[in-house]
Length: 159
Image (cartoon, rainbow, N blue to C red; front, side):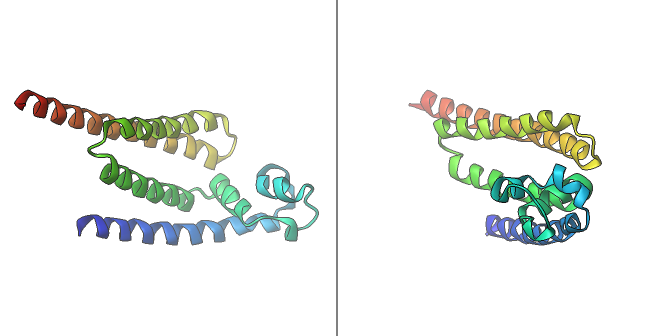
C-alpha cells in the first residue's frame, strides 16, 4: 500500500509538472529568434521552421527547460522517482539486473556533465540538477547493490 501511494503522488506531480512545463514552454511560439536554438524536434520533423504552426509540442519542453526550469525539473524528478521506485521493487533481489540499473544512474550523471557549458540559466540549473541527481542515484544503486550482496553472502554462510 505504501508503494501505491508513492506511485500516485509521484504520478500526480509528474502530470501537473508536465502540463505546467508545456504551458510555460509555449512562449517559444512568440519568440521566432529562439526557434533556431530551441526547436530541435521541429527541425527534425519538419526541416525549416517558417511559422509557429511548424513548431512541435515537444519543443515547448526544451524552451521551458532553458528559460523556466522549475516545472521541467519537477517533471524529471518525479519521473526518476518512479523509475527508482520501480527499479527497487523489481530488482531488489536480482544482482545481474541491478547492474543495468547502475548504468542508468551513470547516464544521469553524464547528462549533467554534458550540459555544463550551457549559456542559459536553465542549462546551468539542469547541469547542477542532473549531476546531483546522478550522484544520488549512484549512491542509492550502490547501497542497494551492497545490501543485496551482503544478504546473499549471509545466506550462503548459513548454508
